[in-house]
Length: 325
Image 1 (cartoon, rainbow, N blue to C red):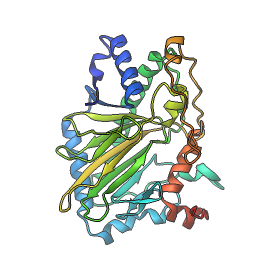
Image 2: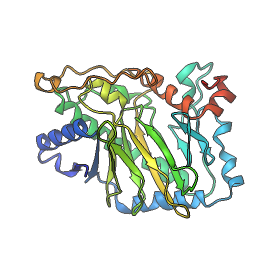
Image 3: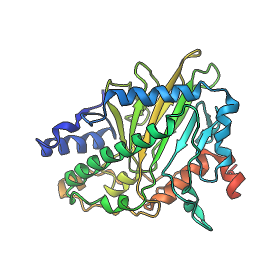
């Protein structure tokens, strides 16, 4: 079972909370977060709106097809995303900050641009923009506690998020499949931290805790599932773990909704390595070296790597990137 941490206790006893959040991220890279201040009716609202959208006919959803977005926004059809070159069995909407296009953009600057919002259900945009704003506040609170727990100033990460953070939200439906068990293949998140809302009563998320050991991470009422991304692994010299995780597709005839929120800094932000206290530095694993998955200190490079691999059809159509064979 993953650790359950209560953010509402952090003001009264910050040292205890900081120690707990540091150790949870060091041992598993995943934990449950309660006491975050987001009411349960907000959970119900976004899950309901997601279900309303995914119940629409494909021709309606295709009005905001990601294939029409050079910025990798909008609806991806079922089977329209890859992990490690294999098809993920899910459909989703990708939502980022609503910003103008960068003129003559190159590389990761192509990720900045407008969203493709559905017109039905009509409250969708307002609800998810509010969701993004509120989760950004939760993410920043967590980062400040993490910074102090690692021996850095509380505002250590603030500058990277102060100007145009490149957050990303996915609204995802996993349908059951008799032919493809891969809801999402094993991967690490490319940013800083993730706040995940999983539909109550569902199953499928698994976290790798050893070389080949996977544990289930079922939803917990009122909790976000939090995991650290590759940039926190870099910043902590490997003391914090960016842990591989995957999603197993539901049983045929069933489906599952999840809404991950990726709290990421500005595209050109560089996360500096923290000078850890000696006792923590001695326990740091070092940043994992994987030639098939290089980790870059500049967030935009990490994000561009991830998005062009996951959506090769968009990458080829809009940016002339030919998928590797």
